[in-house]
Amino acid sequence: MASVAAAPLFMALMAAPAHAQIVNTATVSGTPDSGGTVEAEAMESVTVALPIDAVNDTATGVNGATGDPDVLNVLDDDSLNSLGVTPSEVTITLATGSTVPAELTFDPATGTVGVPAGTAAGTYTFDYTICETANPNNCDTATVSVTVDPSDIQATDDTVTGINGATGQDGVLDLYAGDEVNNVDADPTNVILTVPATTTSGQPNAVPSELTLNPDGTVDVEPGTPAGTYSFEYQICETLNPTNCTTAVATVTVDPSPIVATDDSVTGINGATGADDVLNVFADDEVNTVDADATNGILSVPATDAAGNPNSVPSELVFDPADGSIDVLPGTPAGTYSFTYQLCEALNPTNCETAVASVTVDPSEVVATDDSTTVPAADATAGVDDVLNVFDDDTVNTADADATNATLSVPATDAAGNPNSVPSELVFNPADGTVDVAPGTLAGDYSFTYEICETLNPTNCETAVATVTVSPAPMLEMLKEADDTEFVTVGQVITYTYTVTNTGNVIIRGVAVTDTHNAAGAAPTPENETLLTDAGTVGDSTDAAQDGSWDVLAPGDTITFTGTYTVQQADIDNLQ
Image (cartoon, rainbow, N blue to C red):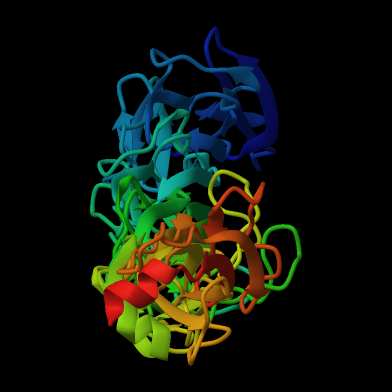
């Protein structure tokens, strides 16, 4: 500082073009002893610094994923001499001791602050200093604060239905589909997908065992998955900001397999012998478009049929639900036997369909063969048992017919509709099939129609004819008697009676008697035929006129003839 002399002190403010200056001029004065006044002046100029103000800068809501090269300029709101400043008026530097975060860019030449793309969310700060270019010591410091927000993240619930659980299916869902991060589709590059241990409501959470969540966000349904709805909550977090997360629910609805149960029927089954495995109800049935069997289906017999009527397996059948087979028991009467069965998917036991199994059992083949025999006359006369058996040569179900598999009867009419019965000359025993000939049966053919019916199916019948032929044995006996046989005299009339009996077994027609003798006159002429005994059927011996010949003489009947002879002298003479 310059030295000054004693003088009065005063100050004056002087303006300069750019900066104000304070010019101090000091005057010192005094009165010397020698008289008068003595003065001295001294002057000093002080430049007045312009007011400089660095204002804190703040930027918020910056999208860190995309970044922004110019989120703010530190000179914004800064002033010099209360006026906005430009980079030409100030020098921008990083404040002493401060560093620019790696997540920000800072250009001291322009004051621009940027956020690079891919910057994690957070608040990033640093201090800067501005100094007046004209007065480098005229400085001020402020703080830059940039808040980077996480990206907008959206997770959308994912749902799929109609999945076939029996076969399973890959990629039924893509959890990334419909999800977004920062308005672009979410994928493994921009999000992290996890399954939290609990749901947002605090319930336990996990991927159901029936599903598989793949690293690429796809969801598979395992083969053999029962029908149902399977859900879990998943979380996507922004890769850039792993705590920036949201959740959604993945739901997969698995359908039961289609089931086709087809009615089953079989005909022509022999009920007498029965048969195994006449039908299998699995045949033509399907589970999930493949043939149904014990591995994919469960068979049962519901208590009621589709119409609500009681339902069960008929006692004549045996149904094996384990393999679907149906047997017909031996000795099953003819008829149609039906029941409703139920086929359920093994994977989903409540997924069921019903169908009807029907077995038609036929009656056995019955063969009735006409039977015939010939009986000698002598046997017929005496009567004979068991001349034939109508069971002979008859069959039921190809086996010999007998009282165990067939019943015998005599229908009221024969095959032609004519009245039918067992002739009185025969005895028919339906219990054993034998036919007897009654005593005194005459020669002839004796027939009747019999019916043989299957014991198992009494209406399954056939007819045949039993015929017994009694051999003819014609025979006559005659007794000749004279009314006087001793000491007859010439001129005496001797009356002869001829008694004729049909002792055979056939009718004899035109019965006439001729007589010869050794007498001199003509032999008697038997005539005046008369029925003496009608032993059999009344009226079966007949004669139209007494002409010396009896027209019809039935077996066992007796007739008489008479003839006369008049004794002559020549008879006496010739016979002496």
